[in-house]
Image: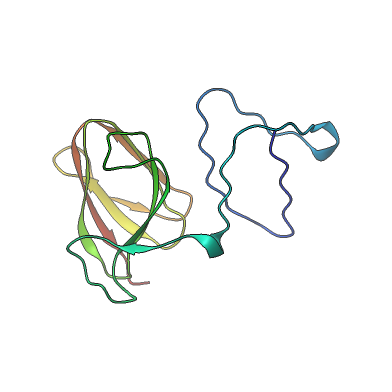
Length: 137
C-alpha cells in the first residue's frame, strides 16, 4: 500500500502489473512491501549515446532494471525543444507517457502522425521505430 498526498494538481507515472486500486486515506492501511521511490531531485540524467552532450541535449535516466541486459526496465527520456529523431523499441512491449511538452509521434510505416500533449500515452509490441519531434512551443 502506498499513501500519497498532494497539495496541488499533480501528475505521477505509476506502472503496475495486475490490479490497482485508489483508496481515500481513511481506508488505507500500510504494510512493508518492496518499493522504489525516487524524488525528482535525485534522478541521475545521462547523455544519450550519439547525442549532444550540452545541458540542452537528449538525456535519459534509468529508474529500474537494466535496459541493456534484456530485463524489464523503466527509463525517463528528456528531449530538448525542437528535437527530431527516432526511438527504437526492440523485441518487447514499449510504453511511453508524455509528461511535459508537446510532441509529434509516428510509428514508421504503421500509423498516422499524431500530436501528443502531457498525459498522452503510446505503445508498441516488438520492433518499431518511433519517429519523434518535440515542438518548440
